[in-house]
Amino acid sequence: MRLGPDYKIGGKMKIVILDGYTLNPGDLIWDRIKANGELTVYDRTPADKIVERAQGAEIIFTNKTPLTAEVLKKLPGLKYIGVLATAITWSIRKRPRN
Image (cartoon, rainbow, N blue to C red; front, side):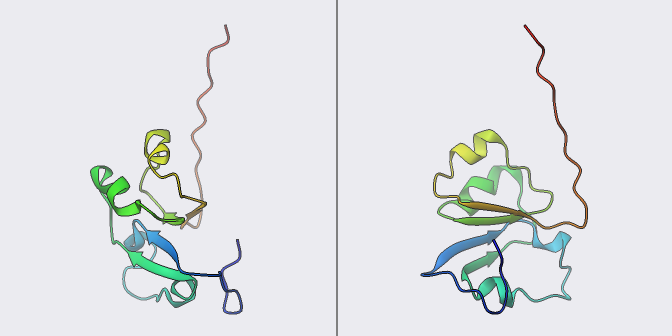
């Protein structure tokens, strides 16, 4: 999904940034994202608040907030997850073979 100055999403999507402080300690603005829907930015989101804050969101941006399978099951309207980072480290767990 391209979010830029010339790109508009039809209607008002709910967009949530769960831990904006990790990318923006105060020197950036979120206007380009805000132009695409109803934006809520949280500095940090503890694990017990993820579902509450992301409920109804179609787009979520995160950096360090863990989005587990259990959490994602509780967010049926979610269409896009963006990672706010300069690098990504993925942890892949191998399942034992039977």
